[in-house]
Image (cartoon, rainbow, N blue to C red; front, side, top):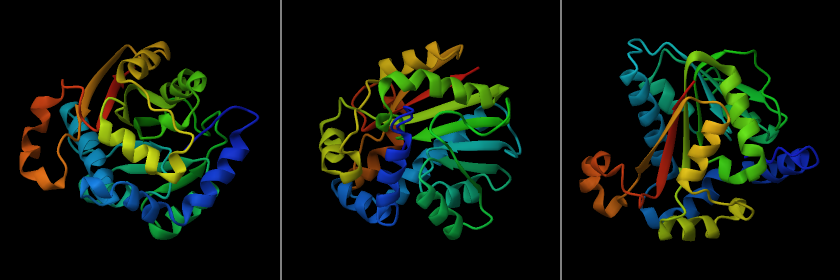
Length: 242
């Protein structure tokens, strides 16, 4: 939800404030072809973050986590369900989205405003930072500086997880074109985003493709992890460490 050029940050804040109250309903209409509700994708992302952290031997998962571009806080109930000991901070440029998230999930997370350029946190504040389909709203020339900001606020052993729409998937492209708040979105090829993560200073970055089957074929979803190499998933993730 960010467009962090100095002359455009406040304009973008107004744009997303406008959609905040109807965000879920608008998104639900746009993804109807998937057969899923928005909550399915929010939980899917949190499940992946939790799995990655467990793989890094974080036994209690009592970690500090940053949701970068959180919108109205759709990740919050799933962190409370799957990682109840985690301390979650939601950051966004849309003040209205943060207001709605804070009222919906009072006590479930910290909701913090962001000016679109510099994160208002000290160095090495978080164990993990993730962004769910945020960077396609950000101009490409701002990706590396913002990813470097995420690196700055991550601890030395911190993990970055970026989820994005896959422009190689025709259904994804059609869905994005139909979504009103994606009018100015530019989808990002996975290898391009991985390269930007590396240029921002992360020592490793890997790509996994995900979300291969619509609800009508949900019985096949247990096989999705075996398909992570196949660049046809509706989304992908870039996972990186400092």
